[in-house]
Amino acid sequence: MEATSTNSSAVLKCYVTSTGALIRTLTNNSGGKHSEQFSWPTNPQSITVRSSNGGRQRAL
Image (cartoon, rainbow, N blue to C red; front, side):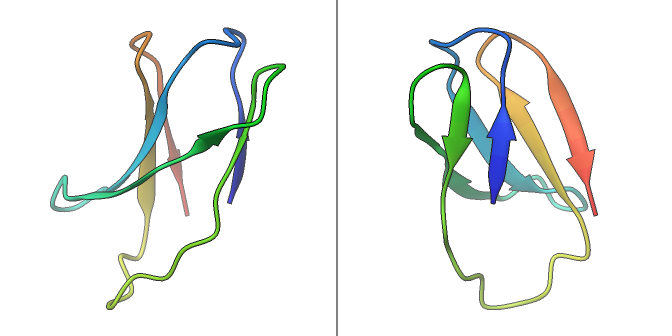
């Protein structure tokens, strides 16, 4: 997964949208770019990425 943030110091975390369960914190690669590769035991259908700065985005 890859994501970008307008704030280079933001922490981005992925959650299962339906349950709110934390899947993983994305690695900050500097310059507002974040990424992570991970597997999840079940198909969450959709995830929500939340920023430590208050923003969020739902991804399918």
